[in-house]
Amino acid sequence: MANHKSAIKRIRSNESKRLRNKYQHKSTRNAVRKLREMTDKKEAAKAIPSVFGMLDKLAKRNVIHKNKAANIKSGLQVKVNNL
Image 1 (cartoon, rainbow, N blue to C red):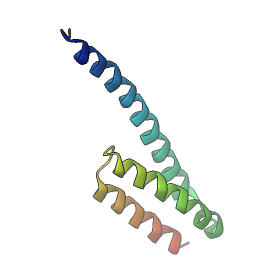
Image 2: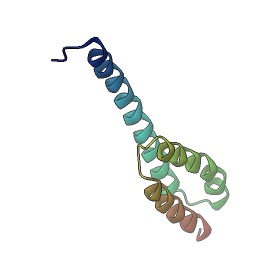
Image 3: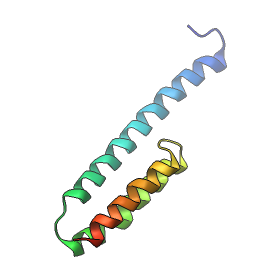
């Protein structure tokens, strides 16, 4: 167990950050999954900016790597363009 007040606080803050990152990551994965399942081009084109924003936010906060976000965004854009 931690011996310093600052270490105890760090444990608490790490846990809350972990839960927030987990929630945001799962929400983004579900949004990407829904976008991949879409068959209507107009609907998909309308949804793509919000999904891209979610991915950019995860990359900015180092939940996922920026290149992974770029790869996912590129693949989604190709899919929407081919609808």
